[in-house]
Image (cartoon, rainbow, N blue to C red):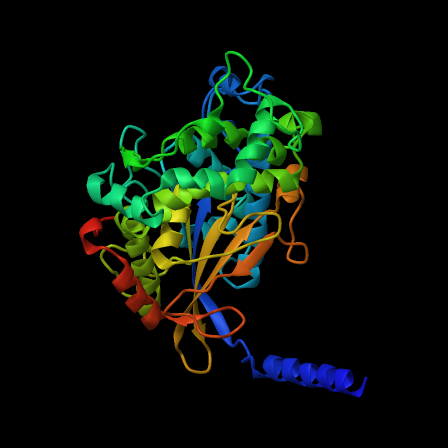
Length: 436
C-alpha cells in the first residue's frame, strides 16, 4: 500500500512538473492558411453503376447528379465557416465588420462545381455580410495549385510512380486483401446483405459484381497510378460515409446495417487507397510540392511584409482559404509527413469539410515567427445532426506535429525558419511554379 501510494505521488509530481514546464503562450496570430475539403456530397458515380455492386438499390440523395454538394452538406459547411468566424474574431484576424474584413481574406477554390459550392457555403458562414469573392480557374482548365500534373507544372514518371507504390508493398499488392481482410469482409456483408459473422459467407448473387474479390494490382494510370480492384472497392463504399453524414434515416445508411463505428472501419479501405496514391513519398513530392510552395511562401510574405513571388494574395492578407479535395490534403500531409487522429475517424482521415490549418504566429516577447499546425473537422455526428458550433462547443481538432520542425510544447509549434528549411527539403523544385 505504501509503495502504491508512493508511485501515485511520484506520478502526480511528474505530471505537475510537466505542466509547469509548458511555456506561456505569448504568441499572436498574424496569418492563417486553411486547406479544406469539400462538404458532404452525392456519390462519385450514379446509382445504376453502384447497384451492380449490391443486392439492394442504393438510396437516392437529395441532389441530382454525381459529386454534388448536398443541401445538408452546404448547411454544415456554413456552420463550420461560422465557427472559424468566431475563432478568427477571437484571434484578432476578423473584426465582425464583414465588408471591411473581406479585403484581408483570400479565397481560392479548385474549379469543380462541388468545391466551388462548398467554398460559397463556407464563405456564407465566415463573412455573411460581405459579397462573395472566390477565385477559381475556368472549369475547362486545370488549376496548377491543386492539379499541377494536369496543368503541366509537374510531371509524373509513371514507371517511378508504380515502383514507388509497389516498393511500399513489397511488390505484393494482393497481400492487402489479407491485411485488410476484416474491412473487406464487412464491406461484402453490407453490399450482399448478410450478417458479417455468417460462416461460410454466401456466394455472390447472380449478376452482381463482388468488388472485394477483384485483384489489387499497381499499374500505370493517369490518376496517378492504378490500384486495381481497390479502386472499385472505394467507389462502392464511398456512399456510406456520405449517407451517414448527410443525415439519411438509419435504415438507408448501409441499408440499416452500418453504425458510425462500422463506417469508420470501412473507411480504412478508402484511406488506404488515398495513402498509396497521394502519400507515397514520390507521388506526394510531384503532386503536392506546388501547393506546399505557395503556402510556405505566403507565410514568409506575411512575416516579412514584402511581396514574394509564388505567394498567394498579398503581405497584409490575414486569412487564406483554399478549398480543395481530400486528395490535396492527403498529398500535402504526405509531403510533410503529417499525421492526426480524431474521435470517430481512422488515422489521417481527411473528413468531409475538414481542414489542415497553418497559423503564422509571432512571439510578443522575442518577436520570433512560429508556425502552428492543426487539423479541424466536424465529427460524424456533428455532420449528421448539423450541430451548431461555438468556441465552447467546437468541432473536433488536434495539434499536428511537423517532423524535423516542431518542438515539444502542447501545440507542436516550430519556428518559421525551421519550417522553411523542412519545406525546402521536402518540396520538389521541378514540380513548382512561381505563378499565382
